Length: 262
Ligand SMILES: Nc1ncnc2c1ncn2[C@@H]1O[C@H](COP(=O)(O)OP(=O)(O)OP(=O)(O)O)[C@@H](O)[C@H]1O
Image (tube, rainbow, N blue to C red; front, top):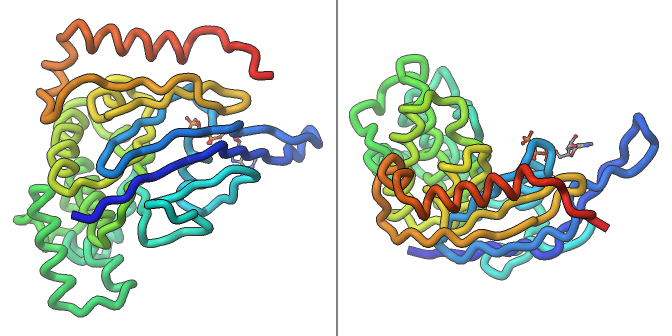
């Protein structure tokens, strides 16, 4: 199972604000690492630069300063070693579930037999092997998101970048998918960066939680999550005092008055 680490070193990014003719510093000296096979979540108030950071890691936006590296190789643009899973699965409506999973493999020019075998393997992994010929409109939101995850895994990226992948789902489906995601990730050993507004989700899924502060976006604290894997269900973990303390600490970091960023 090949795995790669991800490192983000002193990343800075500013945008020119047309309205105020000045630079808006979105990210300042952001630094953290995700070891191979780890899940690290990023949380922080709206506008602290989480999506911008993911886009820099993806290689879609260039940092002004700093370095992003996957497996020690510096990122200089998009690459097949990184794939993003978004809030909406954005499946192609005219393709079946299996053909959606095959999409990236087609782009890579893989032959049909290999594509079909790989897509079936991933549909099994996400528990949808009996739905390969269904079209997206025949699938629930949670099922579509599972297809989106299978599609992202199909090309075997080293790093998965997950941008609030469950936030459009109802609470119950969300908890089911969180538990499933943990199972899938344990089996695939991917290195994951997971952006979320949901602190329970961040703590439940992650090895570490990067708490960001805003204006400029920067790392406020990196919290190590002490719970051993495999983890119990989220409702069980939530009942533990240590979980509640960790959540309270994370919440207080996000909501407490900002220290002077100078
Ligand atoms: N292309 C751009 N041009 C100018 N400003 C931008 C651009 N992209 C993002 N910004 C600004 O950067 C800041 C951070 O935005 P970003 O979307 O990264 O935050 P976020 O933490 O992901 O927010 P949310 O939690 O609401 O999704 C915001 O003030 C936003 O207006």
